[in-house]
Every structure is written in C-alpha cells, then in structure tokens.
Amino acid sequence: MPYTSFKSVNWQRDIPVKMATSRIVISARQFTTSVAQAQFVKPPIQVYGTGGRYAHALYSAASKEKKLEQADSELKSFRNTLQQNAKLQQFLNNPVVKKNEKTGVVSDYLKGQKMSPLTVNFFGVLAENNRLSKLDEVFSAWSKIMSAHRGEVVCTVTTAKPLDANKQKQLNEALQGFLKKGEKLNLNLNVDAAVIGGMVVEIGDKYVDMSTATKVKQMTNLIQQSV
Image 1 (cartoon, rainbow, N blue to C red):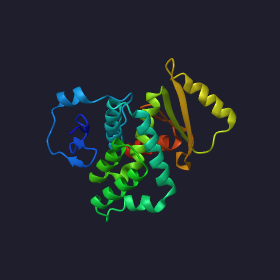
Image 2 (cartoon, rainbow, N blue to C red):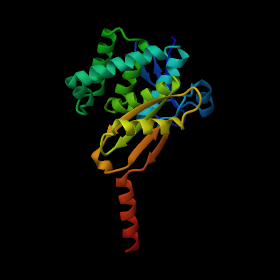
Image 3 (cartoon, rainbow, N blue to C red):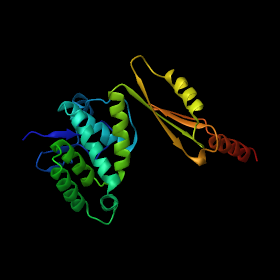
Image 4 (tube, one colour):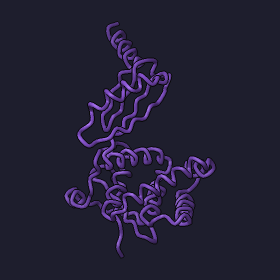
C-alpha cells in the first residue's frame, strides 16, 4: 500500500510516521540519517521549534505529491475554522481528552470538508503525538515556509506603539535593503507595550532585538554582576 512518510532529519525521534490514506500508523523504527536525507525535501527556509519540525515534514510530503498549494489552502481553511470555533479549539487543547478521541474528531471533520488524505493524515499525526496544542506554532511555521516558497520574505516588526504612516514608509524602505533580487517583502506590524521603546525585528530566519526593554535588562544584569 502506498504511503506518505512524515519524517525529519535529527529533529524528532518520535517520527517517522507512515501516513496511510485509511489509517495512521506510528512507526517505532529508526531510519538512518543518510536515508532520511535522501528522501526529505528541504524547505526554502529553516523554521525552528515543534511547529517548524511538523511544517517541514508536511512541506516535504506535499512537495513529493505536488500538492503544496492544496495543502496550503486546506491548512488556512482549518486555521480559520479554529479561529471561529472556540469550542472546537478548546476541545483540541484540552489535555484531559484522550488523543484517540481528538484523532477521531479531527479526522471526521476534515473528511467531512472533503480535504485531501495528505491533510487528514497530517493532522491525525499531530493528534496521535499529542501536538494539537501546538497548532498555532505549526500554522505560523507553515506560513513562513510557504511565503519563502513564493519568494516572499516575512518580516515581523514589534514596537511599543503603532507606527505612523511616515515611519512605516521609512521602515519599509530600510527593510528592502535586506531583500535579494526577485524577493517580495511581507511586512507584519505588531504592538507590544512590553517593548517599551525601539523595536524587535524578525525577518526571514533572522532576529534582531533593538528594544528598550532588552537594553534595560542588559544594563541591569551588568549592574548586578558588578555589585
């Protein structure tokens, strides 16, 4: 029976997972690094953390089946559903609910929405591995990978207060200098009072903290060390 393997290279030891179209089988066998590297389709950017590992695996599987756009559309659809259905989200995040119950609910819902076996199986694996509480991380990592796949560079800038139109324009012009030929900037502006002043910039897989809060923390640490 043909199957799609969701597996990572030295990232997660509870995978590989054989994704059958009719069931999910968690395999305890270990694949060698060389075999995994030969079969794994590397994403355009590296995204770290639990969400990144699963997003990488989905990208590899969807690439092999030439279903990247379909997987992207279905993930966005399910993400929107969770944002609009608080009860479903609470159910999936509830640690008391057994994973087989979550697996059944997720599978039945996605199949009812006529989603592809690839997407159904992917979320089934997340349920089986008790990772449905990490869905926000998975969705975020997937979005970054697909933006990079399309030549977009995702940049998130966090400031203590909203930037006015003039400052937004200056920021946009400055960030263009980080782009390579053919790349497009996908800029997201966030506001967080904890930053105090300055800004925190995440562009691609780079992270630059120029916030006043971090500078104050560094100064405090230096003062404490000298006492």
